[in-house]
Amino acid sequence: MSEGKRRKFSREFKLAAIERMMAGEAVEALSRELHVPSGHLYQWCLRFRRGGARSLRRAGRPRVFPADVDADAAVTEPMGLRDLAAARTRIEDLERKIGRQQLELDFFRQALRRVGEARRPSDGPGVSASTPRSRR
Image (cartoon, rainbow, N blue to C red; front, top):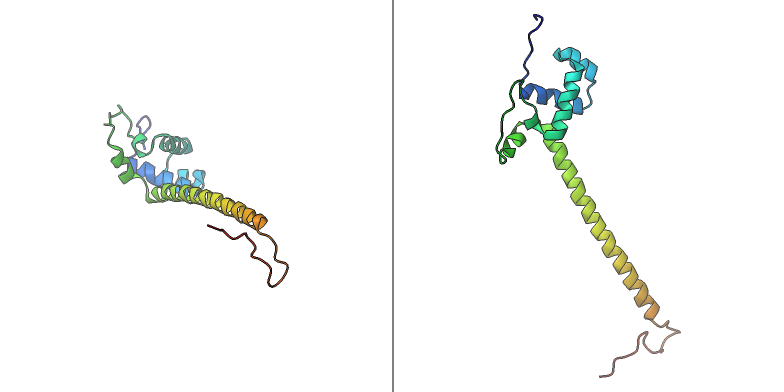
């Protein structure tokens, strides 16, 4: 490679490198294998975390994206990262559901305790019912 020339990396190349970094590969080994400075890898990862796949652009003048081009980012994100985001969303939903169920359990425990306190104990056979009879 000649001195003074900048290498240009495609968005797909950067996304593949980021996916491998996030999967846990050692950055130094990845840097040597891809012939990319480790600082570049860290910068790409930081940009991706801040702005998604759209933030990984080629060198040069930045493009202007319409506000509704977010579908482009979803298409170009690595599969593992989409799965991770979906898993986090699922975890949040399940945690909310567990919270609601815990509230319901607490409510029913308290209701059961109150009903138990309101009942009269039975002293044996032939004794009146545990709660007074309604006379209408």
